[in-house]
Image (tube, rainbow, N blue to C red):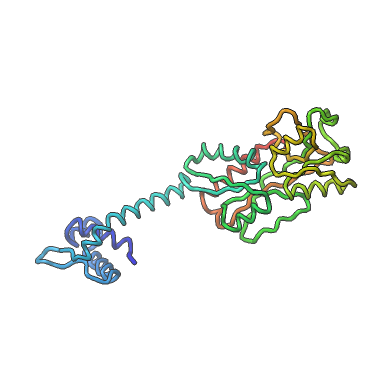
Length: 301
């Protein structure tokens, strides 16, 4: 309804008491001030000023608008400063959805660097396994989502969503420390055909079944959980072995398990997904940059 320029001019007219004085302060001509006030009166639908001799006097509507004008201009100024802060990367909120093994390794490293370089950018951390994490992005529940795929698995994403490749994560086998194969630096998957297994999330379980089928056996899966700490605890108790991403190995919480490289070598692909329009949002862009830097620091993945 209101043009902010007209509100500013009206406020100056009220402060200075005349069109000519407001024109001098604002650097306008007096006719320009007159035209703006006429336009504002048309917008509100009623006169704002009356003349009493040579003096300008506010109407009742003018007095009411004058009471609001300072607040309106203060809010506009605050909004302008906030927008400048967003543009200059001093502030912003980004909702990041990661899967558990990324949230205990890659994400904290990325957020640590982000906190140093852009302390005003706040990240709300969410959790979800793919494909649910991608569905959360499409439902608008997050701004960036992390997901992983395995060779042969193509992620179906809408055209308006961009994929930002981060890293390839080597798969390992998690063994109890006393296991006979724990002395090796790498373990052949075929040598684990008679073992009991602990499977992860549905996508990881499907990959385990696929990898084992390629070698001609079906794994004896006794437990399934997407909680990495639970997997470690079950392995530590000798209840099975598990296929574990190398991303998790530095954060192993128990000293009774060990991770060994798997042969033949297998990797999963980790990417960030974001709507293409959001790539132009400064806060989103710096969070993606922080994730890429952290991914680049992952040695052996």
